[in-house]
Image 1 (tube, rainbow, N blue to C red):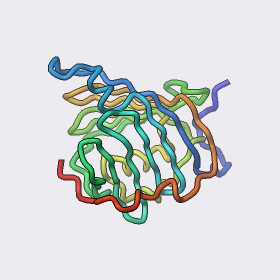
Image 2 (image 1 turned 135 degrees about the vertical axis):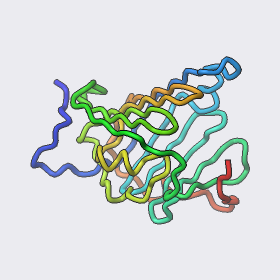
Image 3 (image 1 turned 135 degrees about the horizontal axis):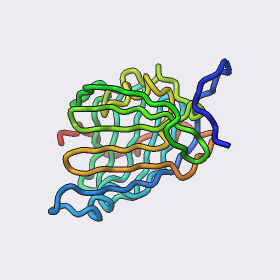
Length: 202
């Protein structure tokens, strides 16, 4: 029986651990095949979260990993195209949300019955599917406006188990394949020592 997404009087502890995701990209440009998007961006993702910090490791040929450090309010990214670690300010969001809709009990992922949050944005349409059991403390991400994350978390208070993103370049589906609660060491979210760090200007 699916675990319902409805909240109850029980206080749900924020999730700490690892989630594995499968990603699929479908190109909208004949000059940029879907296989190339999948290869560059990564078909697999390992997502780790503890409190207000997270790390995403990708198997992409371009995207290698991303770390959000809450106290810095910065998203750090490692791309194969740069020897430096690039960062984006968490408070800066170049996108704009035009409309937000929530639909209850839309689909099931790994036994969790998920609500759907649809954000119509300047960049395209983003759909998130989530269950309250995989909870997040929204207050820790209030300043993480980059890629609309603060707005999503404010409504969902949970990590997405599935995402559908439609842009002018591609459509992307990201779906959880494994959820593992576990205690994580703070060192998981530390940046490598001795590497140049500079602002992402792309």
